[in-house]
Amino acid sequence: MSPRRPIVRAGIVLVPFIIAIIVWWVLAAMRLVPELFLPSPLRVWDSAMQMLRSGLLLESIGVSLLRLGSGWVLGVLLATLAGWALGMVDWLRRGVQPLLFPLRFVEPVAWLSLIILWFGTGESSKLILLTYASFFGSFLYILTGVAGIDETKLRAAQALGASRWQLFSTVIVPSTVPSIISGARIGMSYSFLTIVTAEMMDASSGVGYIIKYGSVYMRMDQIFVGTILVGLLGIGIDYAFRQAAKRLGRRYFFDHI
Image 1 (cartoon, rainbow, N blue to C red):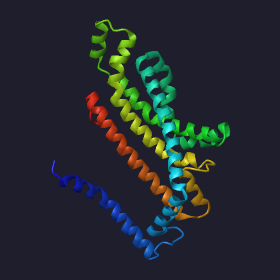
Image 2 (tube, helix red, strand yellow):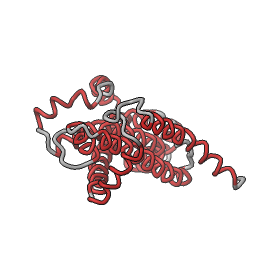
Image 3 (cartoon, one colour):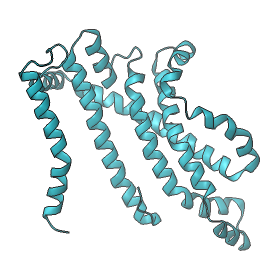
């Protein structure tokens, strides 16, 4: 690979962001949009630095990542178990699938009012929303992976006298690893789409709290800080996830993540 190629790729990625910042700066400098609704990039930067010095920024990032990680792990774990169970047991799939499939079209935010009424606005409600988002982001990928296992592998293992546990651990689990990783990545993106909504439920910390605080007190600079922060965290975590997936891919002989 040419040493220039990574630089060119980085340039291609950065150019749209640079153009967006320039346009933003021009609009703010020329007062084409009132400052109340469009603060300048410098003001947003100053607000971010102020929150960084006060400790609010790092605390919010840590709290959001903890909530996000908890809901994501729980959702992917439940989706994996459900995918394995429904993929291997025909009668269970026929009975449960008609109930689960319509739910994946219901956005987590649609459950917000019911969850608040049932569980209040504490941490449990946030965990439920994030777990729901992660579960339905991952579930279909994992179920499809189980259903797509090569029948030849299963028959060969059975012909060699493999027990149910050996069949599961040596054929089904390795064969579904690519689907689990793909589903986990989609589940993470679904969780990211839900984290701000979850944290705006009476939260006193987190990135969603920064956005909510800014909207209550008309601090557009803080809203911009929180929104940009969500995007940067999403890019960073997705990149880290893809790098980890590539390493796992070399072990399990797949590279499509």
